[in-house]
Length: 161
Ligand SMILES: [Fe+2]
Image (cartoon, rainbow, N blue to C red; front, side):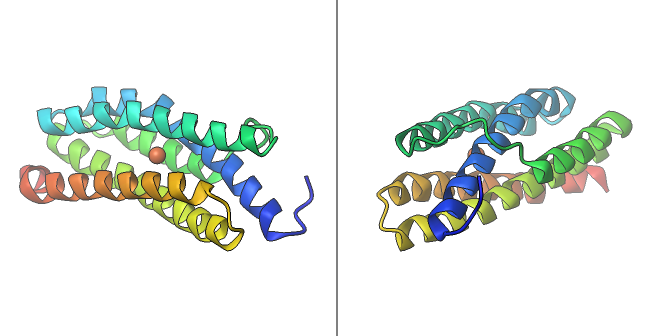
């Protein structure tokens, strides 16, 4: 698809979001398995169904626009997840690995927050009621990020140092 308008750009970014949610959902179980702190493991495992739900909501929006939900594969998320997986596999010390896992997942979260921030703004600009759904997802991404910041601050970083 050629991108000639803000609406085209919006649809393409929505397709990227569908892609990254799917990639995250596939990766989170493995990250949770590599976490040693119980609360961290629970948080990562709990984020997985949320990613699945986000992917479903984005797919529904794309279908309403008559756009192919599978049209793009987000290469940025692919790279972020590859790095995260490498750390998760290579770091032997459980507490240090937990610190790395939190940093990786927050990097993922921040990328999602940036993407959904743009999507909300563009949907509003275009007068689309998609904006409401996207703003809800954006709030959930922010809440997940804050939960991880709290875990890092309260337990994990201290254990790693
Ligand atoms: Fe998400």
